[in-house]
Length: 129
Image 1: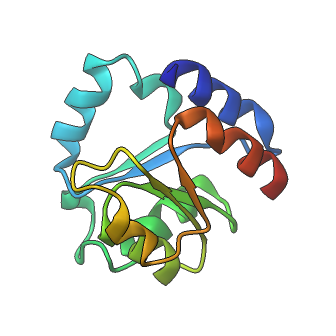
Image 2: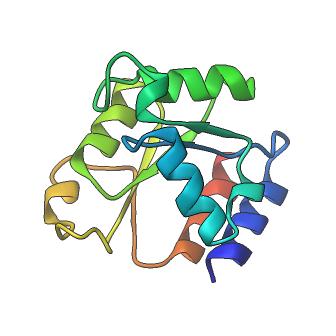
């Protein structure tokens, strides 16, 4: 369950902050998060209108990390530009196999982890903390 996985991620590390970096406008991201009652879990939401250059440029990730006050992070994505942006930011990346475009293209970028379900993130994050 997505809510359970997010709550567990927040409890795991010394710094329990979560953020989102999306190519959607911030208002659109907020609508989606509020619709599924997820906004409460995220401390920072960086939208298309918050950056000058979009993914795969790391600007959004770097900005989120600065706002969260963290030096280490893990970026989870379902698109090539997500994995590229995470690597360009110098952080660990996780690809998801439920990408609408399939996941073979993500494997080619060699993310640090590929997952079938959200719960698979938890052991990886625990090891990174």
